[in-house]
Image (cartoon, rainbow, N blue to C red; front, side):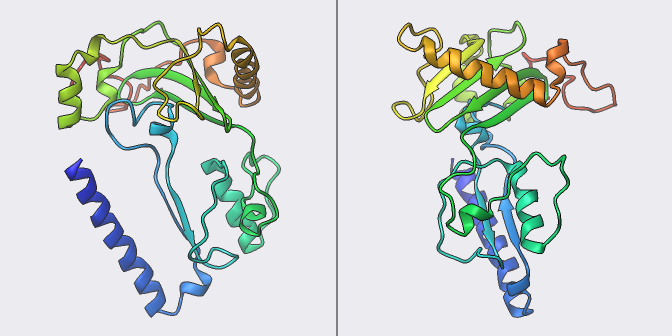
Length: 245
């Protein structure tokens, strides 16, 4: 955690340097700066997982078109919404095949939400771990698509935290094929309700949403296991029980 905080402080300094350079060059008013990341932090149960620890990332934007300092928006968006947003800001017509939605109704204050569901996926990282999820404001539904019932150790980066998890028996902890979390009462997604008899209607509502999205996007998992990459040095070729690459 100390290393993580140090990296965050260094990153903050770097972003500040870039923004100051834009200000000094007189370019800040016509430069849209987009700052985000690709996944959660590299701790166990975070990066390469579909709970919000893994898919909840920051998005900070500064520049013209309403992206001024001091505005915080808590709407659900996907990173595929960034490209349509940029297109609208700079006045480019969006192709019909783009899947994302412009965030500008949120930026202009015309809407409180542009989405009522989000989707995310993992197929390969260092090893095969096929998962898909759908998230609404209240619920998160995750489905795994292989027969493995234990953590894929090699998909977690090395760290003192991972060492502590391994020492506590993490490699033998079961991983459920189907998971359901109540994000209001359980924001840390620690209590799986998929088999809870109190919530069968939620699973019946969320599972078809995921199926619909997989068909709309022609998900390769619909045809069965996804073959591993065959290029030398590719991700996805490592032993799932390995501790290090």
